Amino acid sequence: AVLAEINGRDAEGRPLSSYEQLRDDGSTACGCWIYCGVRADGVNQAARRRPGREQDWVAAEWGWAWPANRRILYNRASADPDGKPWSERKALVWWDADRREWTGHDVADFKKDKSPGHRPPPDATGPEALSGTDPFIMQADGKAWLYVPSGLTDGPLPTHYEPQDSPFENLLYGQQRNPVRQLMPPVPDNRYQPSGGEPGVEVFPYVATTYRLTEHHTAGGMSRWQPYLAELQPEFFCEVSPELAAERGLEHTGWATIVSARGVIEARVLVTDRMAPLRVHGRTLHQVGLPYHWGPNGYSTGDAANELVHLSLDPNTHIQETKAFAVDIRPGRR
Image (cartoon, rainbow, N blue to C red; front, side, top):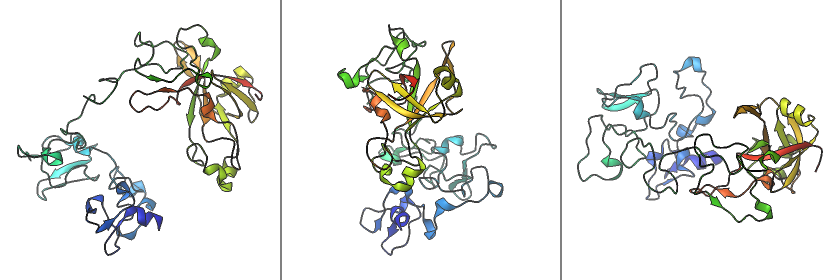
């Protein structure tokens, strides 16, 4: 029933098969346009499991992808200006001159009946101003962009800066960090620690990253109160490699204390090959993985990984760096 409401329906209650059927006159209803079509013909399209050996390499009948079960966005670019695939082996869509429409293995991410030879009139606006050779339909000019010409605080071309917390100097540029990053006041809860070649950088020799688990939702404030989910993921943990465990004396299922300039947390130890050591600047760099779903409330409680992170924000989205920051880790509880 929930999926049916998300998919949408017409005035007669019939399920919609595409977001292109949505109207602004009240004759259709839809919970989320990108999922419109997931229940086309009244069938849960996402539950399909046709084996790969029974279909082509795009595998359009295995599950469902939004929007419109389209597997590759901007797939008009897989065909040349005349509408012929650049590569037969990797063909996605092509122009069928007899049927006067785009067809192929995938659902065309292009107006179905717009021919490769179409040229818009001079007074055309919006999508109608794109020609039949402009595949990037979400861009104003239909072309691929190497950079964003306006709207960014930094740029225009992407480059590499080290994170606010980094055990390494930036080898690519003399500028260590993004010069227009947004820094919050360095209060005790938001201390900025040494980085690159600054004195004291060796105090935090490892790099931590946060991530989510299947069983929990965002910071866990809702999912930790669900007994079944709390049972599946009952305790906050950190992931470390066997090499880091040996270097720091960490025991599998034992306790570890993780430290940054902002805070100290404790977690159970999960020794796993998934957090493989990296070779950076000629030395071994160990990683510490921290799921960020825990806090003091619910059936499953634990320290919050976000206690360790700083508030150095991306200058455009104003999101803090939680995927790479320097820490130390020691055996035992805090």
